[in-house]
Length: 374
Image 1: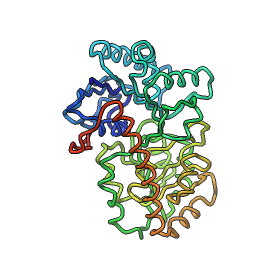
Image 2: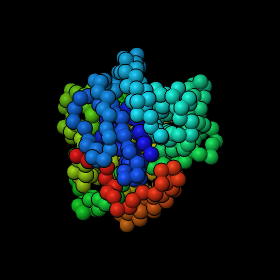
Image 3: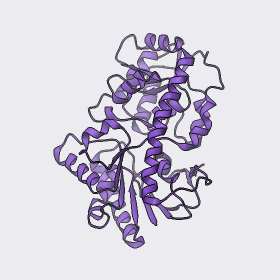
Image 4: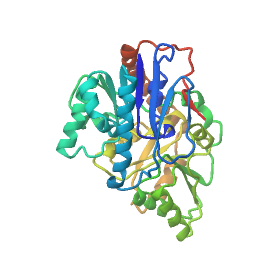
Protein backbone atom coordinates (compact mmCIF):
# COMPACT_ATOMS: atom_id res chain seq x y z
CA UNK A 1 0.00 0.00 0.00
CA UNK A 2 1.18 3.52 -0.79
CA UNK A 3 0.57 5.75 2.25
CA UNK A 4 0.91 9.51 2.71
CA UNK A 5 1.13 11.25 6.07
CA UNK A 6 0.17 14.89 5.62
CA UNK A 7 1.02 17.61 8.14
CA UNK A 8 1.50 21.38 8.23
CA UNK A 9 4.39 21.56 10.71
CA UNK A 10 8.06 20.67 10.83
CA UNK A 11 8.83 17.07 11.67
CA UNK A 12 10.15 17.90 15.13
CA UNK A 13 6.94 19.73 16.00
CA UNK A 14 4.75 16.73 15.14
CA UNK A 15 5.72 14.18 17.81
CA UNK A 16 2.35 12.48 17.38
CA UNK A 17 3.49 11.02 14.03
CA UNK A 18 5.42 8.48 16.09
CA UNK A 19 2.17 6.58 16.72
CA UNK A 20 1.73 6.00 13.00
CA UNK A 21 5.32 5.60 11.86
CA UNK A 22 6.17 3.20 14.68
CA UNK A 23 3.29 0.94 13.70
CA UNK A 24 3.67 0.79 9.92
CA UNK A 25 5.61 -2.00 8.24
CA UNK A 26 8.00 -0.25 5.86
CA UNK A 27 8.69 -3.50 4.00
CA UNK A 28 5.02 -3.98 3.14
CA UNK A 29 4.16 -0.34 2.46
CA UNK A 30 5.66 2.66 0.70
CA UNK A 31 5.40 5.45 3.28
CA UNK A 32 5.57 9.15 2.38
CA UNK A 33 5.46 12.24 4.60
CA UNK A 34 4.75 15.79 3.48
CA UNK A 35 5.65 18.40 6.08
CA UNK A 36 6.07 22.17 6.26
CA UNK A 37 9.44 23.68 7.13
CA UNK A 38 8.29 27.10 8.32
CA UNK A 39 11.58 28.58 9.50
CA UNK A 40 14.17 27.07 7.15
CA UNK A 41 16.19 25.79 10.11
CA UNK A 42 17.41 22.35 11.14
CA UNK A 43 14.75 19.70 11.54
CA UNK A 44 14.64 16.17 12.93
CA UNK A 45 15.82 13.47 10.55
CA UNK A 46 13.45 10.81 9.27
CA UNK A 47 14.08 7.11 9.02
CA UNK A 48 15.68 6.48 5.61
CA UNK A 49 12.75 4.24 4.62
CA UNK A 50 10.30 7.17 4.66
CA UNK A 51 10.02 9.25 1.50
CA UNK A 52 9.97 12.89 2.59
CA UNK A 53 8.35 15.80 0.75
CA UNK A 54 9.35 19.13 2.24
CA UNK A 55 7.19 22.20 1.70
CA UNK A 56 9.44 25.14 2.44
CA UNK A 57 7.82 28.51 3.07
CA UNK A 58 8.96 30.88 5.83
CA UNK A 59 6.09 31.77 8.14
CA UNK A 60 5.90 32.51 11.85
CA UNK A 61 3.15 30.81 13.83
CA UNK A 62 2.16 33.87 15.83
CA UNK A 63 0.89 36.06 12.99
CA UNK A 64 -2.61 36.99 11.87
CA UNK A 65 -4.72 34.48 9.95
CA UNK A 66 -4.73 36.89 7.00
CA UNK A 67 -0.92 36.75 6.80
CA UNK A 68 -1.02 32.95 6.99
CA UNK A 69 -3.37 32.57 4.01
CA UNK A 70 -0.66 32.83 1.35
CA UNK A 71 1.41 30.07 2.90
CA UNK A 72 -1.57 27.77 3.38
CA UNK A 73 -2.67 28.35 -0.21
CA UNK A 74 0.78 27.37 -1.48
CA UNK A 75 0.84 24.33 0.78
CA UNK A 76 -2.57 23.20 -0.50
CA UNK A 77 -1.42 23.58 -4.10
CA UNK A 78 1.69 21.47 -3.53
CA UNK A 79 -0.22 18.86 -1.48
CA UNK A 80 -2.90 18.38 -4.14
CA UNK A 81 -0.26 18.13 -6.85
CA UNK A 82 1.59 15.48 -4.83
CA UNK A 83 -1.56 13.45 -4.11
CA UNK A 84 -2.67 13.47 -7.74
CA UNK A 85 0.74 12.58 -9.11
CA UNK A 86 1.51 9.80 -6.61
CA UNK A 87 -2.01 8.30 -6.47
CA UNK A 88 -1.79 7.22 -2.83
CA UNK A 89 -3.91 4.34 -1.56
CA UNK A 90 -4.38 5.88 1.87
CA UNK A 91 -3.78 9.25 3.58
CA UNK A 92 -3.19 10.02 7.25
CA UNK A 93 -4.27 13.60 8.02
CA UNK A 94 -2.27 14.90 10.98
CA UNK A 95 -4.57 17.70 12.18
CA UNK A 96 -7.67 19.73 11.33
CA UNK A 97 -5.84 22.54 9.52
CA UNK A 98 -4.38 19.98 7.13
CA UNK A 99 -7.79 18.36 6.61
CA UNK A 100 -9.36 21.71 5.74
CA UNK A 101 -6.76 22.37 3.06
CA UNK A 102 -7.44 19.13 1.21
CA UNK A 103 -11.05 18.44 2.22
CA UNK A 104 -12.32 18.42 -1.37
CA UNK A 105 -10.05 15.60 -2.49
CA UNK A 106 -10.74 13.67 0.72
CA UNK A 107 -14.47 13.64 0.02
CA UNK A 108 -14.29 13.05 -3.73
CA UNK A 109 -11.45 10.52 -3.92
CA UNK A 110 -10.59 9.24 -0.44
CA UNK A 111 -13.82 8.53 1.44
CA UNK A 112 -13.04 5.86 4.05
CA UNK A 113 -9.46 5.87 2.79
CA UNK A 114 -8.03 8.37 5.25
CA UNK A 115 -7.36 8.65 8.97
CA UNK A 116 -8.20 11.95 10.63
CA UNK A 117 -6.02 12.81 13.63
CA UNK A 118 -8.11 15.35 15.54
CA UNK A 119 -6.26 17.63 17.94
CA UNK A 120 -6.29 21.23 19.16
CA UNK A 121 -9.84 22.52 18.47
CA UNK A 122 -10.04 26.16 17.41
CA UNK A 123 -13.44 27.37 16.18
CA UNK A 124 -15.75 24.51 17.12
CA UNK A 125 -18.04 27.00 18.89
CA UNK A 126 -18.94 28.29 15.38
CA UNK A 127 -21.73 26.10 13.98
CA UNK A 128 -20.54 25.82 10.35
CA UNK A 129 -16.99 25.03 11.46
CA UNK A 130 -18.20 22.34 13.86
CA UNK A 131 -20.31 20.85 11.06
CA UNK A 132 -17.29 20.78 8.75
CA UNK A 133 -15.14 19.05 11.37
CA UNK A 134 -17.94 16.53 11.86
CA UNK A 135 -18.09 15.84 8.14
CA UNK A 136 -14.33 15.27 7.96
CA UNK A 137 -14.70 12.75 10.79
CA UNK A 138 -17.77 11.15 9.18
CA UNK A 139 -16.01 10.21 5.94
CA UNK A 140 -12.78 9.04 7.59
CA UNK A 141 -11.95 5.37 8.05
CA UNK A 142 -10.93 6.20 11.61
CA UNK A 143 -10.82 9.47 13.53
CA UNK A 144 -8.32 9.45 16.38
CA UNK A 145 -8.90 12.01 19.16
CA UNK A 146 -5.94 12.95 21.34
CA UNK A 147 -8.25 13.67 24.30
CA UNK A 148 -11.59 12.20 25.34
CA UNK A 149 -12.53 15.77 26.19
CA UNK A 150 -12.67 16.48 22.44
CA UNK A 151 -15.50 14.01 21.87
CA UNK A 152 -18.04 16.68 22.81
CA UNK A 153 -17.09 18.58 19.63
CA UNK A 154 -17.73 15.59 17.34
CA UNK A 155 -20.73 13.45 16.38
CA UNK A 156 -20.98 10.09 18.15
CA UNK A 157 -19.48 7.86 15.48
CA UNK A 158 -18.28 4.36 16.36
CA UNK A 159 -15.07 4.91 14.39
CA UNK A 160 -13.87 7.74 16.68
CA UNK A 161 -11.07 6.23 18.75
CA UNK A 162 -8.93 7.62 21.58
CA UNK A 163 -5.22 7.90 20.86
CA UNK A 164 -2.34 9.08 23.02
CA UNK A 165 0.67 11.25 22.18
CA UNK A 166 3.28 8.82 23.41
CA UNK A 167 6.80 8.85 22.06
CA UNK A 168 7.61 5.15 21.99
CA UNK A 169 11.34 5.75 22.41
CA UNK A 170 10.69 7.59 25.71
CA UNK A 171 9.42 4.38 27.30
CA UNK A 172 12.97 3.02 27.15
CA UNK A 173 14.26 6.07 29.04
CA UNK A 174 11.73 6.16 31.88
CA UNK A 175 14.26 6.22 34.69
CA UNK A 176 16.25 9.29 33.63
CA UNK A 177 14.70 11.49 36.32
CA UNK A 178 14.65 8.80 39.01
CA UNK A 179 18.43 8.53 38.80
CA UNK A 180 18.97 12.01 40.27
CA UNK A 181 18.04 13.41 43.67
CA UNK A 182 14.64 14.97 44.34
CA UNK A 183 16.09 17.06 47.17
CA UNK A 184 16.83 20.03 44.99
CA UNK A 185 16.93 23.73 45.77
CA UNK A 186 16.05 25.78 43.95
CA UNK A 187 13.15 23.67 42.65
CA UNK A 188 13.41 23.66 38.85
CA UNK A 189 10.11 24.27 37.06
CA UNK A 190 10.33 23.64 33.33
CA UNK A 191 8.15 24.32 30.30
CA UNK A 192 8.93 22.69 26.97
CA UNK A 193 7.27 23.01 23.61
CA UNK A 194 6.03 26.04 21.70
CA UNK A 195 5.93 28.98 24.12
CA UNK A 196 2.46 30.56 24.07
CA UNK A 197 -0.14 32.17 26.36
CA UNK A 198 1.90 35.22 27.25
CA UNK A 199 -0.36 36.64 29.97
CA UNK A 200 -0.65 33.34 31.84
CA UNK A 201 3.11 32.89 31.77
CA UNK A 202 3.63 36.43 33.03
CA UNK A 203 1.47 35.53 36.02
CA UNK A 204 3.58 32.42 36.68
CA UNK A 205 6.78 34.43 36.29
CA UNK A 206 5.54 37.17 38.62
CA UNK A 207 4.68 34.68 41.35
CA UNK A 208 8.12 33.05 41.45
CA UNK A 209 10.21 36.07 40.37
CA UNK A 210 13.51 36.17 42.28
CA UNK A 211 12.14 33.65 44.78
CA UNK A 212 15.20 31.67 45.88
CA UNK A 213 13.07 28.53 46.19
CA UNK A 214 12.47 28.30 42.43
CA UNK A 215 13.94 28.46 38.96
CA UNK A 216 11.73 28.59 35.87
CA UNK A 217 13.11 27.28 32.57
CA UNK A 218 11.61 27.55 29.08
CA UNK A 219 12.74 25.20 26.31
CA UNK A 220 10.98 25.96 23.03
CA UNK A 221 10.65 28.15 19.98
CA UNK A 222 11.42 31.80 20.69
CA UNK A 223 8.76 33.45 18.57
CA UNK A 224 6.78 36.52 19.60
CA UNK A 225 5.53 35.20 22.95
CA UNK A 226 8.88 33.77 23.99
CA UNK A 227 10.72 36.95 23.05
CA UNK A 228 8.18 39.10 24.88
CA UNK A 229 8.53 37.01 28.03
CA UNK A 230 12.32 37.14 27.86
CA UNK A 231 12.19 40.92 27.49
CA UNK A 232 9.71 41.10 30.39
CA UNK A 233 12.17 39.28 32.64
CA UNK A 234 15.05 41.52 31.57
CA UNK A 235 12.98 44.66 32.08
CA UNK A 236 11.96 43.65 35.60
CA UNK A 237 15.40 42.24 36.46
CA UNK A 238 14.06 38.76 37.11
CA UNK A 239 17.11 36.55 37.40
CA UNK A 240 15.65 33.10 38.07
CA UNK A 241 13.84 32.63 34.74
CA UNK A 242 15.81 31.18 31.82
CA UNK A 243 15.09 30.78 28.09
CA UNK A 244 16.97 28.04 26.25
CA UNK A 245 15.47 28.22 22.76
CA UNK A 246 14.37 25.49 20.36
CA UNK A 247 15.45 21.88 20.68
CA UNK A 248 15.40 18.68 18.64
CA UNK A 249 13.33 15.69 19.86
CA UNK A 250 16.17 13.69 21.41
CA UNK A 251 17.50 16.78 23.21
CA UNK A 252 14.44 16.68 25.47
CA UNK A 253 16.09 13.84 27.39
CA UNK A 254 18.99 16.15 28.26
CA UNK A 255 16.77 18.37 30.40
CA UNK A 256 14.27 15.78 31.66
CA UNK A 257 16.75 14.78 34.38
CA UNK A 258 17.10 18.46 35.34
CA UNK A 259 13.39 19.09 35.87
CA UNK A 260 11.58 18.93 39.21
CA UNK A 261 8.15 20.26 38.20
CA UNK A 262 6.65 20.20 34.71
CA UNK A 263 4.82 23.42 33.75
CA UNK A 264 1.58 22.40 32.04
CA UNK A 265 -0.45 25.57 32.68
CA UNK A 266 -2.24 27.29 29.81
CA UNK A 267 -4.88 29.98 29.55
CA UNK A 268 -8.43 29.02 30.41
CA UNK A 269 -10.20 28.34 27.13
CA UNK A 270 -13.52 26.64 26.48
CA UNK A 271 -12.05 24.58 23.65
CA UNK A 272 -8.37 24.05 24.42
CA UNK A 273 -9.05 23.31 28.09
CA UNK A 274 -10.29 19.92 26.87
CA UNK A 275 -6.85 19.00 25.50
CA UNK A 276 -4.36 16.44 26.76
CA UNK A 277 -0.98 18.03 26.08
CA UNK A 278 2.09 16.11 24.94
CA UNK A 279 3.86 17.07 28.17
CA UNK A 280 1.29 15.17 30.23
CA UNK A 281 2.71 11.94 28.83
CA UNK A 282 6.29 13.13 29.32
CA UNK A 283 5.49 13.78 32.98
CA UNK A 284 4.06 10.36 33.78
CA UNK A 285 6.66 8.52 31.70
CA UNK A 286 9.59 10.26 33.41
CA UNK A 287 8.03 10.55 36.88
CA UNK A 288 7.93 14.35 36.96
CA UNK A 289 5.19 16.10 39.03
CA UNK A 290 3.09 18.48 36.94
CA UNK A 291 1.15 21.69 37.48
CA UNK A 292 -2.07 22.06 35.49
CA UNK A 293 -4.62 24.73 34.64
CA UNK A 294 -7.38 24.73 37.24
CA UNK A 295 -10.63 23.39 35.79
CA UNK A 296 -9.08 21.91 32.64
CA UNK A 297 -9.73 18.34 31.49
CA UNK A 298 -6.02 17.55 31.80
CA UNK A 299 -5.86 19.19 35.23
CA UNK A 300 -8.78 17.19 36.56
CA UNK A 301 -7.31 13.96 35.23
CA UNK A 302 -3.83 14.72 36.56
CA UNK A 303 -4.95 15.96 39.98
CA UNK A 304 -7.33 13.06 40.61
CA UNK A 305 -4.73 10.66 39.25
CA UNK A 306 -2.13 11.84 41.75
CA UNK A 307 0.47 12.88 39.16
CA UNK A 308 0.24 16.64 39.72
CA UNK A 309 -1.94 19.48 40.98
CA UNK A 310 -4.23 22.09 39.49
CA UNK A 311 -2.88 25.61 40.04
CA UNK A 312 -4.16 29.11 39.43
CA UNK A 313 -1.25 31.48 38.77
CA UNK A 314 -3.51 34.42 39.69
CA UNK A 315 -3.59 33.09 43.26
CA UNK A 316 -1.38 35.36 45.43
CA UNK A 317 -0.24 32.26 47.35
CA UNK A 318 0.69 30.36 44.18
CA UNK A 319 4.40 30.05 45.04
CA UNK A 320 3.82 28.98 48.65
CA UNK A 321 1.26 26.36 47.62
CA UNK A 322 3.58 25.04 44.93
CA UNK A 323 6.49 24.81 47.35
CA UNK A 324 4.31 23.04 49.92
CA UNK A 325 3.04 20.60 47.31
CA UNK A 326 6.48 19.63 46.06
CA UNK A 327 8.19 19.34 49.45
CA UNK A 328 5.39 17.15 50.80
CA UNK A 329 5.11 14.68 47.92
CA UNK A 330 4.92 11.04 49.00
CA UNK A 331 7.31 9.80 46.34
CA UNK A 332 6.42 6.12 46.64
CA UNK A 333 2.74 6.96 46.09
CA UNK A 334 3.58 9.39 43.27
CA UNK A 335 5.72 6.85 41.38
CA UNK A 336 3.00 4.22 41.71
CA UNK A 337 0.37 6.63 40.39
CA UNK A 338 2.53 7.45 37.36
CA UNK A 339 2.83 3.73 36.65
CA UNK A 340 -0.91 3.17 37.11
CA UNK A 341 -1.80 6.09 34.83
CA UNK A 342 0.68 4.98 32.18
CA UNK A 343 -0.65 1.40 32.26
CA UNK A 344 -4.16 2.68 31.50
CA UNK A 345 -2.85 4.81 28.64
CA UNK A 346 -0.80 1.95 27.20
CA UNK A 347 -3.89 -0.27 27.16
CA UNK A 348 -5.71 2.33 25.02
CA UNK A 349 -2.57 2.85 22.94
CA UNK A 350 -2.51 -0.89 22.17
CA UNK A 351 -6.17 -0.73 21.17
CA UNK A 352 -5.30 2.07 18.73
CA UNK A 353 -2.52 -0.06 17.24
CA UNK A 354 -5.03 -2.83 16.56
CA UNK A 355 -7.14 -0.42 14.49
CA UNK A 356 -4.05 0.44 12.45
CA UNK A 357 -3.35 -3.28 11.97
CA UNK A 358 -6.87 -3.78 10.65
CA UNK A 359 -6.09 -1.26 7.90
CA UNK A 360 -2.40 -1.77 7.20
CA UNK A 361 -1.69 -5.28 8.47
CA UNK A 362 0.55 -6.38 11.33
CA UNK A 363 3.78 -4.60 12.11
CA UNK A 364 7.16 -6.33 12.17
CA UNK A 365 8.08 -6.06 15.86
CA UNK A 366 11.77 -6.54 15.12
CA UNK A 367 11.94 -3.16 13.42
CA UNK A 368 13.13 -0.16 15.35
CA UNK A 369 10.37 1.93 16.85
CA UNK A 370 12.32 5.15 16.53
CA UNK A 371 11.52 6.50 13.11
CA UNK A 372 12.74 10.05 13.45
CA UNK A 373 15.89 11.09 15.22
CA UNK A 374 18.68 13.64 15.34
